[in-house]
Length: 211
Image (cartoon, rainbow, N blue to C red; front, top):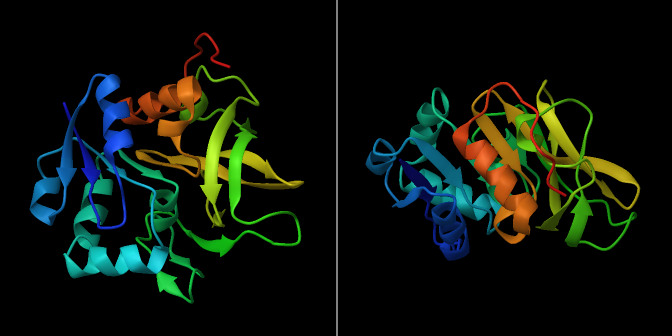
């Protein structure tokens, strides 16, 4: 089964591709709208600035292709890729997103702690989420970001603590998945979460926890 990884000029996808291949999938780099038709699942990688990447996606006529893909097939957004799934971002002014999930992307508050937020943080989940099946509550994942998602609709949501404020670390809405952290840099926990999103589990089942 081919996993498509969207390739833009802002993302180094080598480590992400290596992780996906270790999970047993073949990787196809996607750079045109036509190529999306050849894959079963799609990853939006997580490097760059929101307005620059959206401008590039519009330039290569990729926005509508991604939206059509997400109507029926599993799609995973990582870090910036997760943020692109929302309606808009305030990064460097106002920019429209892909609008796969209702919500906005906002800068982390400087009043709480250093920005960008870099390092290992615990994952918390109020409700069962497919992303966390078999992953222990408060397992650690690796974050690098200055902006975060404010979700305005019902999703299965994973959180982390940013100096005392709970922020979104991941979400699932049917076949649409997003993670703010970098699973390809999060060791066993990241591998488990990426695999769960790629195989698209619709109903969580209990498994042996991974710490």
